[in-house]
Length: 337
Image (cartoon, rainbow, N blue to C red; front, side, top):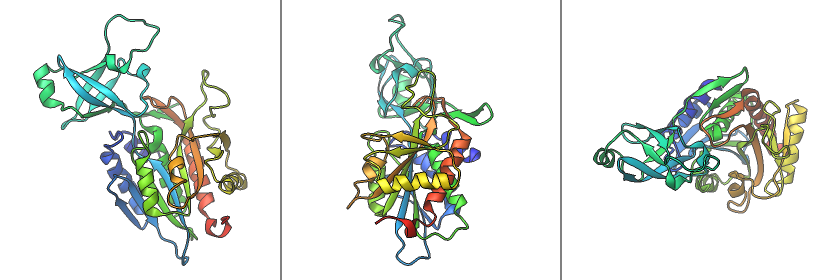
């Protein structure tokens, strides 16, 4: 898992520009399923056929895009920009960026001198220094060029990994691991794996992918907030405490109960995440595809979400994968219809 995580998280692929991550995801998925394709939205779709005639379809989803920035203009050689997805302005000053030109450029987020040190600087007052003159920058960096954090992927302590775009490529890696665990098992469902696009801006990739697959059941796998000293105790989750199983109106009740039962049956540590409204995941869009889809949301605790230093537990990743595999086995026979 760690090698796949490092490969995916070093890809530069913000929402709407997921091509590099999709190519790696498809390569990693191909040995584990019968067929892999990339659709018009850039989604990666893999399917493992079932030998059971008329087998129902299970769709497992994790999104491949990351947050980013997009260039809106050049001013005295410096780049002005807007956000792609939920970028926290407090994270930006002093950050190194990759400007996705051909070839890519390095950039540095700078901000105006002075100001109130106790307040974050609004995005429209920040700029990116790429070390070019006005003429050079206009020629090298067209308006509409995306940018992402420049960051690697490295261990933190014995069990944790840190880097950019763990949200949500770490969860796609758990789908790969689940498929690996199921490789030698006879399944009574047709297993579909979706690496979806544009989750950080609209969820459009999951909408299209779910419509195309027309699943009977789906599980949206995404990250949730890991526990830190400043986080609310009822809305953050322990790293190392296992996957967080979503409970709420967006989740189909028997799917939630089955997820909990399988965690207990296989002695997989788990936590419960109460989601009283919109889950902030693709599960929201997937549930209402076509005539409706029985839906579950499974989350991986993650510290420092939407920063260049997102941090997770490798043990939790394995727990997510094991729970997905246990949930998948005999689903066709045991599902409530």
